[in-house]
Length: 317
Ligand code: AMP
Ligand code: MG
Image (cartoon, rainbow, N blue to C red):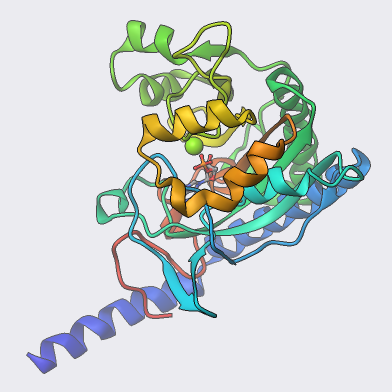
């Protein structure tokens, strides 16, 4: 028994070390570095202020899917590891001197083991998260298209050998991206519409109207639909970004929390602020690892992480 365990550990140590020392791993690291470096520059040029990431908070994103709880007790309070900084983005915009902000934000989401081999899920990743006061989805989507154009140009310029190794045709040209709605694609392709459309697409596209967390605004002109948007990578790489106009009116937040079955007690201070008035805002966040995975055409996001974080699976380091 003990011998088996030692053998198993030795095998995974070998695999772990092989990945740690692989050339592809370093290619992806360089792509991630180029993305983050260019993103900082772009945000600076566009006047977004960088907010430092938080890793612990009494409130974090409730997400629209289940994950294993990641919280600790400290100072008489329960602190969750950050799943996303959505609420902190909204609260930061209470400061009248801040109109737009971004965070390079480490997120911990202890995804269940059924996401181990989706190719897209880590249980720890980094998202570049941004938010604008008084802007709408049209503005944010156009901002993201500009950012994407800028990032791809930077990666192409900084890392020509790596780009031509994985994408001999070069990175795709980003113009105004096509926009689809979930209900239309579902009618056309059935329940697996996002995946089917992503596989068929040659360029990233927008997908509007997802039913999810209470903080994504319901369309007042069409209740039951939502003013949110995902950017979907083509070639089957799937979702790369999620964003929305935010639900900022108190009564509407309460209604949406009730629909989602959210524990209002856990959000009592946030709700108190919402009652006094949250700013109108819109924003989005994209996963750095998923963008690098798309650029390098890597099938499994875990195969190129320097330290794999495969859902539901132990790691050695
Ligand atoms: P969300 O707001 O939940 O859609 O997360 C924002 C973005 O973070 C997503 O669009 C992905 O690019 C990225 N992301 C979310 N969950 C994961 C995960 N488990 N592993 C890697 N990237 C993720
Ligand atoms: Mg999402």
